[in-house]
Amino acid sequence: MTTSKYLTGDAAAIDEFIDRFDVFLLDCDGVIWSGDHVFEGVVETLEHLRSRGKKTVFVTNNSTKSRQEYLKKFTGLGIPSDVEEIFGSAYSASIYISRILKLAPPKNKVFVIGEAGIEHELRSENVPFIGGTDPAFRRDITPEDFKGLADGSLLDPEVGCVLVGLDFHINYLKLSHALQYLRRGAVFLATNVDSTFPMSHGFFPGAGSMSMPLVYSTGQKPVALGKPSQAMMDAVEGKFQFDRERTCMVGDRLDTDIKFGVEGKLGGTLAVLTGVSQKEHWEAADAVAVPAFYVNKLSDIGLVARKQ
Image (cartoon, rainbow, N blue to C red; front, side, top):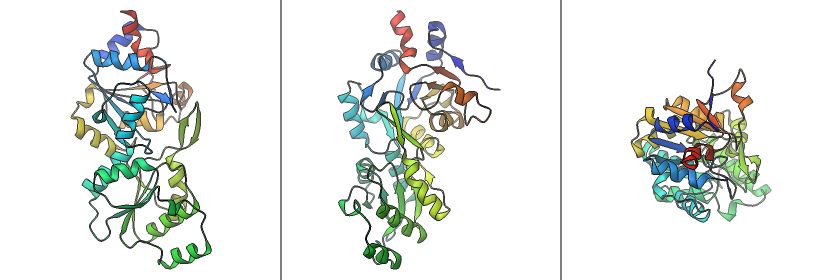
């Protein structure tokens, strides 16, 4: 049985751990912050890693923000960062659609269930889309909608893909449009399939909760472009050109972050206990993934800096 090494409080083990890697891929929600609350010691820990020549990359499944919007959040919370260090699932999905899927006209438009982050990243890749934050889709469904969706008169004939991310305004009208496009052959994509979303020290429905009704309705599963999808790992590696053996994934979720690192054959994975998964989850016989290392909180690996 695979076991995880506990690092909190062991300065020598932490020092050795840091030396093993050149690149740290870090999740954000549940690792760096919860909502707008930055966990204590995070800024100092990131500074310590960078001072030792380590590359930090923020790999997040949260599709509600674009990279530029994430940069604003980092800056606003006092966390030094650069837009090129940020790799979100909205960006990953946009890259996949524009450079891999390469939808051909006239079926090259995307129907979006999600927030502005997805829209911004699609625009950055010149991908046409409808839905998203358009007020026309943020309302109750009407008898006329049912008729027009059923006969196709309300559908855009250029839609060839449905992309589902976290949507704070999810409703029956949006799901009905998405279902009709999927039934007519549109490609089914998801920024990620997280079941929950950590916010304000609690948990709320995640992006996977948005796509699940469509899974039930169609019998199809979406291609997911966030963690633990290895399509995302390949995209991150392609952008940053790192050695996987010298790279560590840091996260709070076994089913996304840790599985992402394990299946990506990274040199290590580090779980933090400030988010979703706890020690008993990976010690269970049916654990989806087991981290190589774990700490109580991210700042515990900054212990070396505080000891010096």
